[in-house]
Image (cartoon, rainbow, N blue to C red; front, side):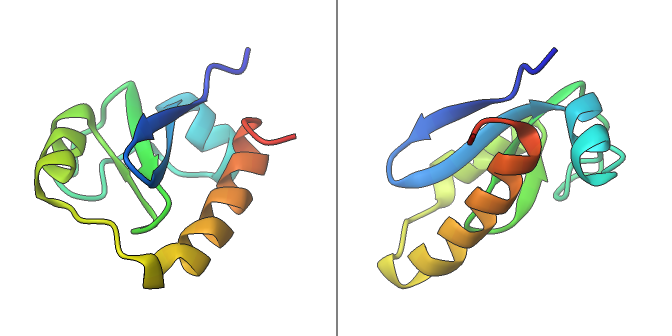
Length: 89
C-alpha cells in the first residue's frame, strides 16, 4: 500500500514516506541523513536530496530559506523520487 504523500511547506517540494517505502523505491535503509536515527516515517526534501526523521525535519523547517536558483535541481530530484514513490503518475 502506497502511503507516500506530498507535504506542503512553503515553496519546498517534500514527500513524506515510510522507511519501508524508501527501501522498496530506492534501496535506502531508512536512516535519517542528518542524525542517523531509523524512524518508521520520514521526509524526503528534494532541494537538499535528503530523507530526514521528523525531528530533523522540524529543524529544517525552522532554519531553511528557499532560493529560486535551486529550483531546477529541486524539480529534477522531486520528479525522480516522486515517480519512484508513486506520488507522481
